[in-house]
Image (cartoon, rainbow, N blue to C red; front, side, top):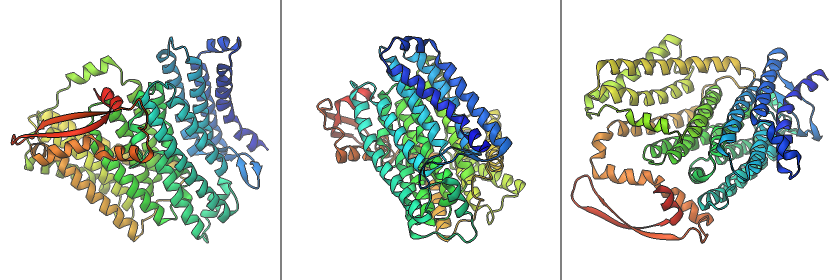
Length: 557
């Protein structure tokens, strides 16, 4: 009884948000009184409740309320290290976004309606991560999607936002159907929707995956991929630049994380399926690769941030496919705070002026210097693995993630070693690379210790998963080498044409638009344009007739 009562304490935070939203949505005299209650107060109370929940988990361990429903399906709250960690993160982000919105919407006639929708969305996300039953996960999975849709179309006179919301609605319903089918398979196989019962069954030594559970894990991967805007259904996320900035911050820092969170929440089941692991590696790995490269070619800040979020979500799902769920949660939390700051400060004139003062050293394009940079990055990586006792036969997945990070560090080292920069800059870059490597392995170990009761132990991948990982790493290596030799590649006709295709995202979004008819709107009149560009070789100009939506043309200009 005491455990049940304690597990209900976190309900105070979302209920306060729902009450606040209810008063704001009513056209009564009490509405003006509610506005006198600053949004910061609601946010601060939420943070306080999240911290109290953390203390309860530290003091009593995992707490779960009784199921309110029928035949082990219904609503239940679960307090454990994973849920309270995400609860604290969402509470802090909610406080910051509510406070930012107060100034952002100053003078807006529909300010009350916006805050009402925003408060309901934050409350729904909190109830999603606190779920103790698969039915509750599905219910608030759908509710958060519908709340996001209402925020995306807050300004109905913005055609680009309406078109993006339409695509998001279609993708979200496909994801909802996948999640519902997965839950049905889990319930039919295990006879319960209670998370504690599911986790206990999967951890039993005699547990064997049956056909229904294999289907369930695959459907869960599809639901997570659709929720987190994975390739090729990512186009809607790139086009929501016309939505209010607080909505973009909440979307990229909070709602997109539902996909990786679902994988980590169901990790005891997911790790039992090699098929699901390979699906995560292929979908997440290719999405992270393509989106990160396309991100580098985008001239618009918000569009670039959109591709950045797609890449980060892909990387999080990729890590889940590796079986290193602690690194996935670590990455989700870090990305959430970074992306919230990036969007909320995207209009800062001061930051724009400061960025213009930064001058990167000019690259030489020397093959010897690039090779030296890669060797330095690999040397630091293997030295740290040796120092911490990480062995490839025992920690293959962890070393694979570290190798991807090393590929990124090589970019940092090449920028200074292969340039006219000073020796001091080179030493500073090496120090930063070493710091990043040390931080990753240290924080990953700390997160593993913290979440040890809520995630499965790190396992060695089987033969197929191991070769899938190695194939993906080879693809990453080829792309990284192309980027490292970018000064030489850029001067070729192939590099010039590749840059154009990358900037347009390989036209996947256009194909998706045609499939669902998202541009069949009279506000989206097609415009014929003649594009003339000169190739780097100077051999001549390329003239091409293209069609583009008028709204997209105005947006890009």
